[in-house]
Image (cartoon, rainbow, N blue to C red):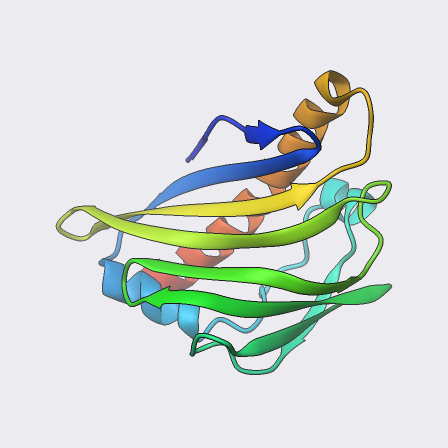
Length: 165
């Protein structure tokens, strides 16, 4: 599990976190596509910093599908923008009625799967967002640390599920 460097432009950032799964890309893909919600609450520090997810409503198996992600205190609507089975699942955030980190606005994200050897798949999870917090040199590393922590929570839950069979 390795955080990748932060890619960014002024006020816009993309955070990428990767993790290895002891599973084929197809096994990981099946879990990703039929994944509804995490079976564990986020760790305490994430519950203090981010809204707690409740559930997801809607389909997400075709390009153009929209899912409403409900959180304590609001929701997001995600629209699927690309599906390449066993390779890439991408989405954009079309609506955000959710307070995040002093005005952060999520714009999208993706899961990229790469089978690195037989039975081992590297999963990269990315989140794109805009942040009004200044100065960026101070806030960007803090935002990245929180985002990587949330990504690791999601990826660990997926990996447990996939590897358990």
